[in-house]
Image (cartoon, rainbow, N blue to C red; front, side, top):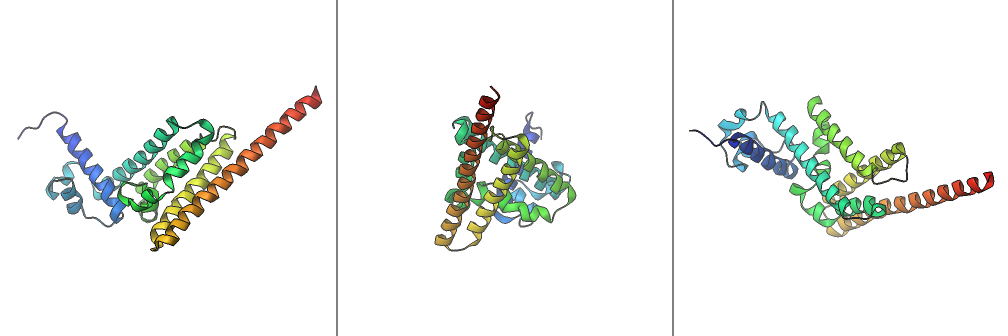
Length: 213
């Protein structure tokens, strides 16, 4: 049977997209190849026409999930004033809908622990995408040096990920909501402190210029 041009690429994309959702729901080791193919509406036998191994699919599916998260961040950035962009990313990440929708959420809280136990290839691919996420957040701190922005962005992503993990694991809605609010508040306090430091630094520079004049 002959297929239209691009059929194989579209089929592969459907498999990766289905796997991306399922892995976030069930974990990196929680879904078999047969189940992943069934989710895509395909038979198990066709898997190796598209992927060398299950790991190859997992790596590609996680990369897709991380790209989707970054795409959401970039959409928010486009419609948010520059001074508010960092906090806007935090707000769309640490919230109840993200906590409750594991399959369509960021793969960091859903899969980071599984990736830590995976192969070097999987960890390397994960790290590359994580670096991209850090770079996006770091660029939303234009008043800081590149190194300071990167450090704060890394800490923020770690806090955001941990907040979602604990809020999902708590099992009690009141505690879960409290964890979400605590995580948001912690990052907001950092933002306030950071802005205060920038104001003081700029004021000091102006004073120094006046003294030299």
